[in-house]
Amino acid sequence: MMENVKTKTPMWYWITASFFLLWNVMGVLSFFGHTFISEDYLAKLSVQEQALYGSYPLWTIVVFGIAVFSGFLGSVGLILKKKWSKSAFILSLCAIIPQMIHNVFFTKSMEVYGPGEATTMPIMVVTFGIFLVWFSDRLIRKEWLK
Image 1 (cartoon, helix red, strand yellow):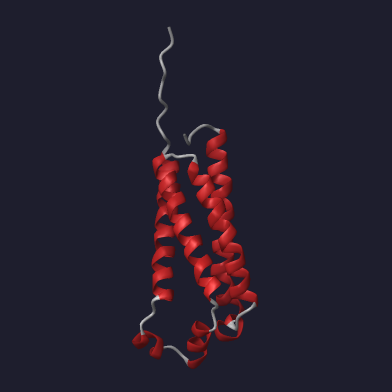
Image 2 (tube, helix red, strand yellow; image 1 turned 45 degrees about the vertical axis):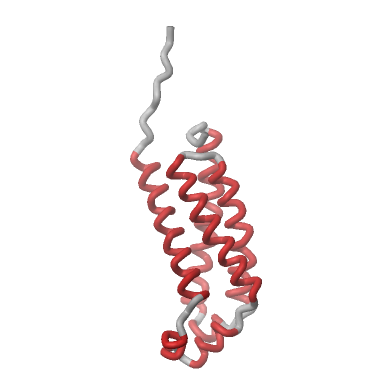
C-alpha cells in the first residue's frame, strides 16, 4: 500500500513568492502615495511634476488600484498556494497594460522625467505582470497550486 508522500516546497518557490508579495506591497503603497499625495508634498515637486499629477484622468486611478490590489491578492494566493492567484494576476495584468500605455504615451512623463526614467518602471511592471500570469499557470500545471 502506497502512502501519499508530500514533497517539500523548494526554497526558490518561497523566495519568488515572497519577492512578489513585497513587490506588490510596494505597489499598494505607491498607489496610496500617488492617489492621496499631500498638498505639502505636491508643492515640493517641480511645476512640471505637479502638472503631471493633475493630468491623470479618474479611470487611470481606478485601473491603478485594480492592478495593485489584484496583484497583491494574487501574491497572497501564491504564499497560500492557491490556484485563484492566476485569476488575480490576469486581472492585474489587464489593468496594468492600459495604465502603463496611458502613463508612457498619453502623458508628458517623457518630457518631465526623460525616456529612461519614464519607461523603466512601466517596462518592469508589465514584465513582472506577464511573468506572474505565466508563473502561476506553470505552478497550476505542475499541481503545486490547489
